[in-house]
Image (tube, rainbow, N blue to C red; front, side):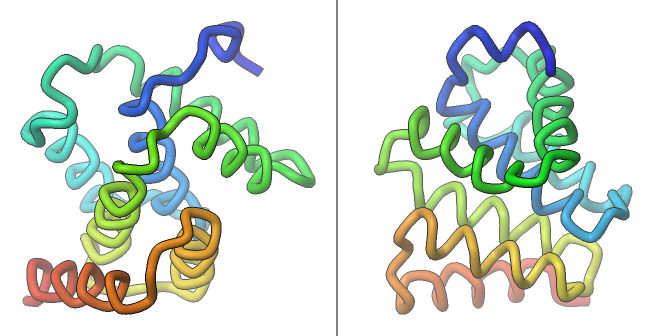
Length: 140
């Protein structure tokens, strides 16, 4: 795994990791998903001070974890340890946006979104609102 994992992940790194994980969950990272991740990092206030060069490092951490048997659990451990609770719904919203970016939701993406809801204790009613917003933004 990358040496940079020795430095703690920033909250922004965690948000990027969740987005990359959703994109990679179906083993097919689509251009629309990458554009959505890049757009979020470039435009959202939470990423205003983010070092964009860390995206490659964080992406590699996610890919490395996905190759391990308990990699998803390790990823959620990293996220919970380094992402303040006030950003949990933000993480879920970004994950939904990435999942919806290509206009279709594959079963692995749906399962990962469900796991994110569980791991970050996203209230079901709040999750439904977040999901509806993502669908509305990506309808074609």
